[in-house]
Structures are given as C-alpha cells and as structure tokens.
Length: 380
Image (cartoon, rainbow, N blue to C red; front, side, top):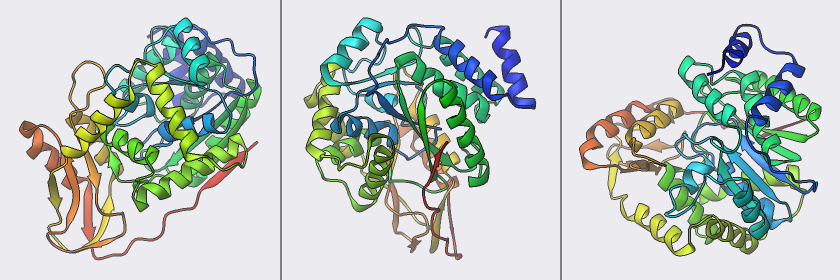
C-alpha cells in the first residue's frame, strides 16, 4: 500500500477528513486505472455500505435498466453475497473486463457489472484490502471515497446508496450516525458532480432469507420468474422503492427486469441455461435443516452469520461458493423445539463447524422483539 494512502487512512481513523479531501481521495482512487467515458446523463446505480442479506446490488441494476437507465456498475468482490460476487458464480460470467469489453457489454444491454482491480480503480481495491487488514473498513470517510471512486471510474451520474444500519455497518451503528454519514456522502457526491440519494435501512435483522452467493443467485432466479416467497417479495418491494428514488416513480415491469438481467448474463459470458442450472443445483443441495433446541423468539446476530458463511465458503480461486443458508424463520417470530430454523448447504467435512457457528449467531429467548425501523431517505 502506497505511503500516501496509509497516511490518509490514519487521518480518517483518528480525526476524520474534510469534504474536499474525501472528494480528492475519490478522484485519486478512480484515476489509478481506466475509466469509461460516458457523456450521457442517463447513467445510474445503487450501491450499498455492505452487510449480509440485502440483495439491492443484485436486484436494482436490472430494475434500473427496465425503466430506461444505463447501469455501469463497479464493485469490490469479497462479500458473502454482493452483486458481483453472486453473478461471478455463474459459469462463464466474466467480471474482470477491460475498457473495450465493458463498453461493448454496456452497448449490448445497457448494464455491465465488473469488479475493481487490474483495469478499473486498482488503488481502491488495494485500499479496501488494506482497510480490512487494519480494521478501518467501517470508517465512513474512507467508505465514502471508495464508493464514489467507483462511480467516477465508470461514469455514473445518478447515485443511490443503501445505507445498511447496524452494529456491523460501515456508516455507523445507529440511525443518528448513519444520517450524519449519509449527508456527508451526498455533499461529497455533489462536489464531484453527481446527484445522490441515500436510503437508510434497518440491517439489524435479515432483509430476506437467502444468505450466501449461491443462495442469492437462487433468490435472483425466483424473483425473475415471479416465484419469490412473501419474505423475499417484501425485500423486492424495498428495492423497487430504492429504484424509484433515483430513477423516477415508475412501475418496474417484471418482464423487462428479467430480460435485462438475462441479457447482461449472456453479454458477460454466461448463459440463461447455466444460470438456471446452477441456481437449481443450489436448491437441491439444501436438504439438511438446523433445528430449534428451545422455545422462544428468534434473534439473529448478522455479523456472526456473515462470518460463519464467509469461513465456510472456502478459499478456492474465483468466487468461492461452498456454503450458504436459507432462513425459515424471521427475526422476532416465535419457534417451538424441533422447529426448523434454516437449511444448510456446505461440504460434509465442514458441516459440524459450520452448524456450530450458525447456532452461535442465533439467539432464542422469551422476550418478544420490536418492529424493524422504517426506511429513511437522505437528500442534500
């Protein structure tokens, strides 16, 4: 890591950065690699601050395309089920594209989804890894620069950001801290010539039940086919609201969304057949339940749940996808002994360790939980 970036991280951790310095850092990170030169003003994207169970970075891009936006999307891989991580599990899908290939994909289907690294924003990818190593991932000023550098690199003009508010969040552990960081994000975006909206969501409980790369891909297939369950449908409604905040209050056509998603998969080297085959294989591998050992109300520690999935996913090259879960019980619901909490997918050799880690992420007690916080919107 370059000494200048190490110094910036230290200042951000110990005192914070002025708006102008955050904007300058975003520009420098974007300038470290190639850029897409998109003069049109119809580009848009919805990013997130990270955290498990929300599928906004996977579901929102084809929705935006369906309402007439172009979506050049640059992400940092490494999450249990970030958008680029999920698409990268599709056999043949290419996430590492150069400028020419990215422009060709965008011209074909108005949507390209690639990872930061060798071609685009390599300094941001390196800085992200360094932040993880030194415990500076959840520093809002650095997260803002990182997020906006990727929008600069691919020419996004209209930016939505899902701010996932929880103890494990990168924009603060509660809504007061998240509002402050969200206002700063919008201020910096304005300095950089972008229109920005932040949507604050309660990430203290699961947004939907499919947790893991393959599981998120299965959820994606169910949504595209109109076969989502009620819990996933509620999350889809939240994602639709996010799209409306930056793309205009129009109804998203499900067929157009599905068409946009499949066209992108095919343009980036995958195929509809392989996408569906792999999603169906994930569903078939979910045959083992994790059972409640006591009666009471269910709580999830999503930080522990995320870590359990990451540790069980494997360390193979590319987008490792050895493990995941499908939740059967919502946070706050009451269960009885022997009731199924979730189903597990993992190699047999890792099952006992994975199940123990999952149990440590689930608490069942006699106290009912309250309702989740409502969404909030921050415009500047």
